[in-house]
Image 1 (cartoon, rainbow, N blue to C red):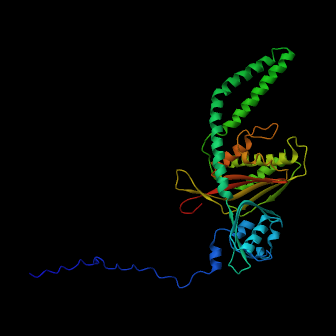
Image 2: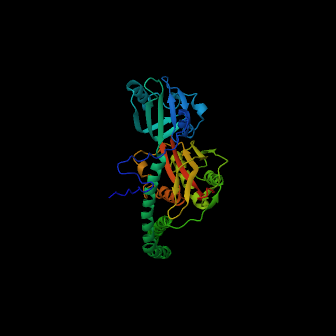
Image 3: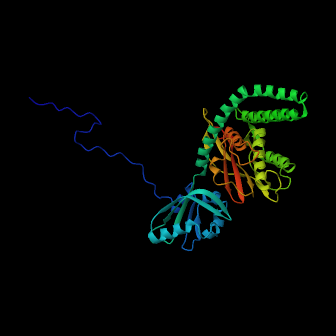
Length: 392
């Protein structure tokens, strides 16, 4: 009997047969050159020669250093940081040993630059080259966001406390104040002073409770706000009162788009920040003077944050700064600046900066403070609302 030959199914390889190699997409005929790849990097890159002259800077270096690539190529590293800065040791070590070195949490301070918490990586371009590539990573936005979340949690704890105080304290406090006021007109002179003391203390406690009520989680009414008009209003109020003897400097970018926010709350935040700056210069009693407060605005590309419960994203390119020439903030309290009830003022309640952090957080923004002797700068990163279509 002859065995029948059964043909194999079409397209099905025989067992043990080699499978066909899938076709790969054709390789590009030319690869981008090194310069084009450097320009596409989102992090600042510098190339320095043995004399520490800047021979190359990419596009991301321009906003980082606040100057153009052509300007940077005219500088030496010593024009940006002091000669005893750790960057010089890093460069010498890279050249001497031919290794890649990473330094974390560096402070870049000089006449043209003020940056903190920078991670710098240095490496030789190749084994025989005299050039060293420096890449600079600024994680300040991520750290500011982490601190902002901490501040918001602290503000929520104050919000809950405020609700309890409003319910449990304000009503009996009103009764105490009313009774003290009645006693003022019926008791003898020695006792009248005690009645006045009770009334004044009741007023002080009530004012504190009302201030804490501002931490309540209420939705804010937002619309486009001209931040320069807000700053001008704040400056005029300050110069007519607590900052009458202080010089103001305005460094504004007139091309800024409107802030997406609440005008009254932005006035409240900025007025509080300017008052803090003025008191840092003159002291709480206003006896000092001769200092300077700089109000500034700029457009900086920053982080985009997702809005919880929405498909929208918040863009934070609007930078507002309040800088003073006061003595600076003590290093021991800098990590706790936005915590409720923390204050170094004799008459302070410790709620001003905590409230500022809450209001800025309610706007979807970020607040951060950079301080050292002779210079304290508060930076507000404020939003423009961007829909999925990309339109503001």
